[in-house]
Image (cartoon, rainbow, N blue to C red; front, side, top):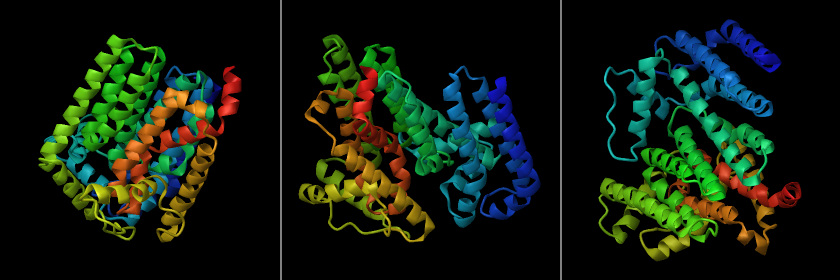
Length: 426
């Protein structure tokens, strides 16, 4: 196993013993909202499952430095999942995670309806885990946390392909950023959606760099995972990929035609799925439905009303700039009361500073970097879609932003450290 494995195993084992002796009595108290009658057993199952996954990670054939960073991130994710999150769960009695766990307790599998019915998809996956592993709410969280770790690692590998060198700093940054660390560890749609986007990003960059068709499989797989969770997100990913495909100079015309046909087919599937789900027959209905959905999110302590209706082209044009800014950078300090609002605001303020600093360094030659342009278009397309929902509920905006946060950070950091990167590549 090596010295790294022994040290990590000893650290995890010691932590597990401390948890069982000192922490276990509080698990039942903090888990008062969790629909389970055996919380101690539930929790110990999760600790054991987290240890097994750590051993799998230790055995995985990865370079030593990557493995050290991943083990550190996994330890932090387990700390969030099995310790910090218990206080979060004790505070909220109506989390979606409880519904997913309740669905997993049924003898029959939950039905899966329309493409994009993420609630049913997550419920089915939670049910499927309980067919192979002991029933445990906390163990489900550990599994979803592992999916979040896989997403972070996939983003890192995509950045490494783009830079032609290991992006260890980005791996640490993404894995330890509080928003990513927390929201990629919950039992819900977000870790799965993040993993789908990560596969898509990796596939797009690897395919563009090598022009090998097999990477398109990862693009399609990522899009299908995203569409299974949130269908409306798929078009925001497909359009930038089409632009990248058409402006690439090293990809043959035949490959462009084949790839464009595939992307357009996926776009059509997503479009008609949305049309069927919301019973939309023409463009005016689409805007009216978007306005109604957006306003339905304006509930709770972090809710706010839109300053204008978006049921017309003019209203949409007036709203998009402020809505996109909200989706990407709010809440800021003072927007949401309480400790959670303050921490989220401070993180967003730092994110805004990094992005602004990066944008100030944009030069004309950056337009020749197709991947950089693709990332920018991806951010704009995502923000245009999520402006409609995120503006209404700043608490939800923090969670939704997980989807685009790794790309936004990578884009800004690439601009900030462009000179150092170019020197290393020279």
